[in-house]
Length: 105
Image (tube, rainbow, N blue to C red; front, side, top):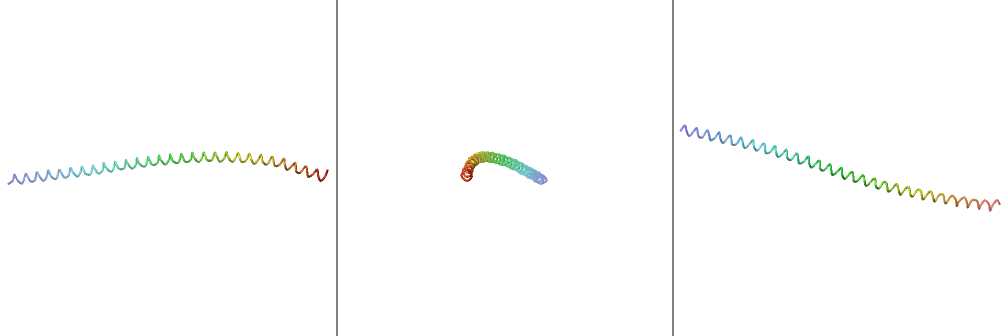
């Protein structure tokens, strides 16, 4: 009988040890899974930041290109206006000279 009790006690101790080992493995598995999830989240954040930076850089380049185009157009328009004003000035002087000559000469 003592032998049976001792076998039961040994079996219970072994069962307790198995349960404890399983719990430790479960805890370690959870810890590992959380660490892996955190790594994946950090990697995803890093990739998202890189993509965001790339998009912002492309957008800035596009804006700079548009800015340059606008400035070139504005310079051409300013040159055209200046030339037109110069031509109009010459014409205005001719008209005034003719009117002056007609009235006073």
